[in-house]
Length: 369
Image (cartoon, rainbow, N blue to C red; front, top):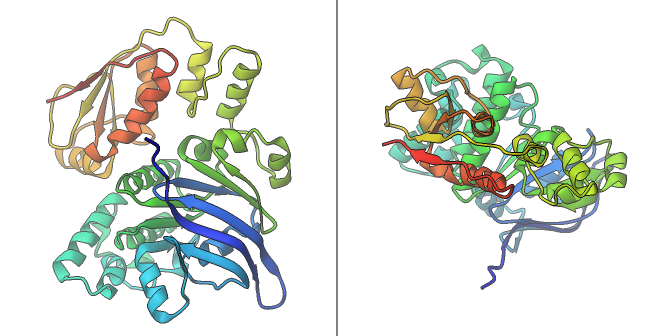
């Protein structure tokens, strides 16, 4: 039985011209599936931010249509309020959207405006701050925070709205490497709850391994849209957009061209399996929040609940970012590894284990009791 995929956001012939005559968007027609992870790529000034501001009604198109959940976006007060309850937008510069003095007040602002009960607002604020690792900074003045911390607050404010669509414009700009991986971890958590996640980024490597759908925009026009493998195989598009080929994709193409493999690997650990033989994997030991047991090999953590647990219990974890990929790397080198993992993120692990299984290698997984 075939399951039809629904569309959450759609534009048809969308164009937009700023005051002064600059045309920012030209005849854009795209469909974004519900529950999809989408990466928009393109140079600065390509129109990505302008398009995002149409998705939640900040801007109104000059021509064409924008639909959310199969209904045209209404630019009435009532229509925009309803839209922004479900479509949240994290701007590139957090200072453009943070306006409260204290961290938790800013995160609570949106939920309070939904007329939610105080207990529900508090629950959402607690959960959002925990996800971005700012629960211990909740009473700090915003102006005492670093740029990266302010960015986390902006993300928390969006998460507290419990959105059906989370849009983040260049979310990793100005963040350190660990927080970059944490942010994609957060995106996976949000997506697992059924939400569609949309980002713009210049990081082609992460877009290749993370996204389900890649859309390339240049000079306000869509040049390509498709799976990461499809889009990064379009050399003319990459040249026009000034995009480099992800290393993983280059290796995939090399292996396919030389007839050594027809398997598409999304991450470095899986694509390298095409070049390796006689791999005898170690075992992955999965630990859940609340479970304390023997740690095998290096330990990693993935998920906000697991992070909170290991911090409270003062458990020594060596792999604090990109943990699933790095633990699998250890295992493919023949070592055991331990992963503290939220139940809600099992699908992320399952997808990566299936990538490895496609190469004929089954990683033993033991759930620690």
